[in-house]
Length: 304
Length: 241
Image 1 (tube, chains in turn green, brown):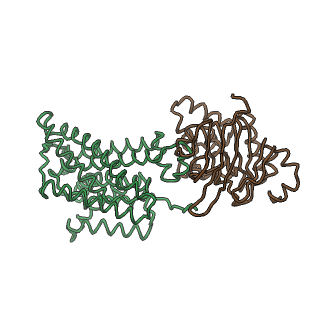
Image 2: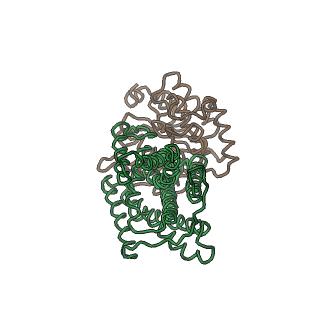
Image 3: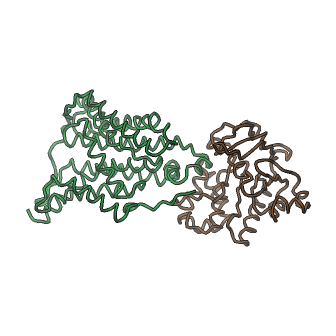
């Protein structure tokens, strides 16, 4: 295998990983935008998404088969169900804390994370649940480079979701309202925007995207378990910060950068894959030192 | 249009404050449909708080606000805006990061019909050609005067029944102050009901039909604008000019 082939192969691997990171990072950044909350439960929302996808797939697989059709159905159902879960979490746990000090709501987010994680731990006794998706092993050979159909579908789905989100945010009144709320809530109220409702929609979309990633990850890697959201939660947070927290294109960019860095980082001689997390967080520290607002983030003036 | 004697907005014994600080101490105020009423007073007299209490950003601790005959004292701010009571706050609050056009689109958030939105956008562009020219630029990069036009244009996108204007001339060059006031006058002549808070009392009294003078959260005096303007002692004592 030539260096170029290795490069291409890692590019593909990095895109797959980066797609997962980006989808989860989007929720982080959108939710931060509207309520200025680092939703540390977001990784666990992804995990719950994986489990809902797992449950739905086990129901629909006998009907439509365990291939991509079944996974697609599971993903859509998981997105809707977990979207509503996100809204419920916001209403029950965060809404009452919105005027409390920032630290209180942050701790609430950690509590929600523990509730979700331990809830699923109890229900599943901490066992890995085999997803039962049968996606096949087909793919395209380009010289020594092999891209599986699964990788293509996965990256394509992630890209489609992100394009849909971008269109929603830039072209619809609700999307504009979402951006406006992250800037000036009182002005939004004066324009007749129901801020609480827009926040709910934001939680729905952010959680649904995480659920899509959770279901796809479960199908792609073959299983789900209660702790699967922990590391990706932190990675997605890292991606959001690298891109500039609050910036939607920033989260997509940050996710992809992180995915690519991790897959390329493992190829550096003398550095194995066990170092990839070190890589991500070293980059986080570097970005925080050099450009604290992130790559696409804008500095925020405090309005008096 | 309804008869000019109809009361569109009425405040009855309104009290409001921030924590233990009392900002408004029993305000009575009326705005007739089609009229332009101005609210004057020194800094800290409670002008801005009065507007915020009307639009729902600040909750009254006592008293009643009635708009078009309905009690809106406890109505959420976005619901009040939906009914056509539109508040243009002090400092313009142009949404940065959103284009001029997007700012205007959001002004019409409650207008569901796209045709109406387009029609209003055309009207706003006709009134403020500079906004049409810079519609794709970031709203926060406009000059102060242009931002004020955007803030007013955004309110017009709503199709307001009552416009609350808080210090529209603040921080503008003298020439732009006159220009802004001419726009306010045109809106009023076109039939928009306006409650205007303005630091330039002389100018405000020239435009408005009726005036209230606030002092430390009380209405100190009120009357026809011409009467208030003629009374030199009032202008000196309360308006600081």
